[in-house]
Length: 392
Figure (cartoon, rainbow, N blue to C red):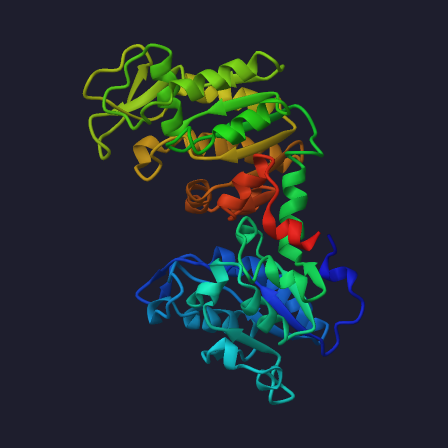
């Protein structure tokens, strides 16, 4: 896979740049700019090389229909301010666009095509859409790792018609994930949360063979607590997952990997309650398990202290209520402490986890923070991502 940095002459070259600018919008306002901030380097790099940039992206799920509330206009305006550069948003039907329509004036350097998912051919990986897009440019750059698990026209099929390269952010993301999949420095620990084991079973089974420690927290841990014969009260849990948990424990028998799950928890009678510390065999019928307890947190912090690499995906509890945020913030503080003396490599992913570290403004204290979601998890499961395969 070639990086765009491997291409020598980009002067006046028209670059079709696929980005993931699928940011949350509320009444036309952007509520989280994380994904936008991550793609500024590739835009500045191409501007520095005097390229002409054609940006392709999407917002939401318009299902192949034009929806004004899912226009890229507010994102286009946000980027304009960030790079102090005029950007033209083209709302015309892509199939009516010609190469010479895009940069009519010598000082035009960036154009935005309107939401690519307004075209049903995008999600169908349609050859005619990809071929028409390719006719607008000289080179293609994928800097949307978070879309690269999708077989979509502007991610996969497009590479059949243009010389294709990986963008700066995509290369950074893959290099970070290699640190926790193939270029591992041990001891290595995975801290994994979320509400459903079924969505993470492939990830857990794949990592058991490579990792020294798997720590399960959050709603997923409730299923294991229940599987071990304990009551979980009214706590969030997934039905019919005993066979999946058995698979995890059976896989563990074949590898020198240790699994850790809560031995004490913080409970409340509702989500807005204050917290009570309880052992896992003391849960009452009307209790909600909403965080890990102090003994469990101390154990996790000791494991982190003795690790050289850590992958974290999923908060430890219902951190939105400060009474149940201690586990999540305690894990973050333990990783940050090791990061400060450069004795650990840390990769964080997952929307809720990123939200938690943003809440306490410590994102810069981790080696890599991924916003890739599904692509992040599928890569860690060992799956081949269609967008990466297409670049290769």
